[in-house]
Length: 259
Image 1 (cartoon, rainbow, N blue to C red):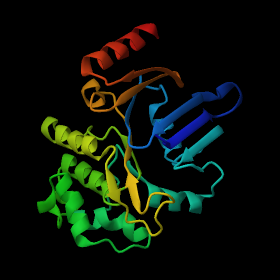
Image 2: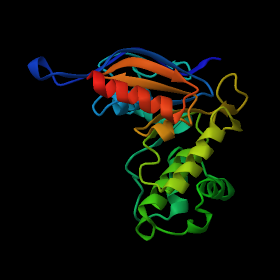
Image 3: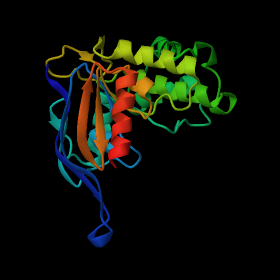
Image 4: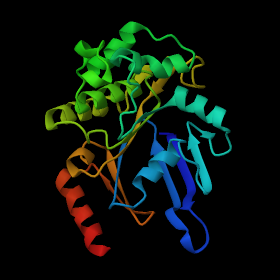
């Protein structure tokens, strides 16, 4: 299985001199195509920084990041933006919805920004995936916090990205809705779908296999993944395959005790 995302000697430092803080330290890591990986660690361990560098939303201090075989560190902002629109999706902790647009319009926005006219059926299917097909005409102010998060998730799913990055995607959702979302992500991981990109990815015949990389603090959420990676003080300190919530919780407890 080839890699959808690969990190080589990834280091991220904020500040300089005596005030410098190293968030990531020489991380070597790969995310195989079609895999579902959860990233966990104590507060301040570098989880979100790792996710943002891997997604091309933040630039590392040193090291390399490959998405679908392409080294993105040397890309300029325009090239990075184009790559993110065509290859990745990102579910943020904050909803980042435009208040003047309806749910349907917010979901369609990334494709419109990429110069593509999304089919209404495609947008409606994305909303249906998160249980909001009856809220297509509602604006964010008319939706609950959980519903706004689900619109943001549908927006990330609509372009059927090759890599979907998620930062605490269930944080604003109730238990039932969170489980439904995780079931959706579980079904998406490894699924081969027709990509709506302008130019099909080389060797994929216009189809992509979805890879999911998710940051979470909840062992029950992490248990939906194929594997869990553990960070501490900016370093990769462990890995758990075929995780259970109990095994993840035990590993997190051990990390907390060792600090």
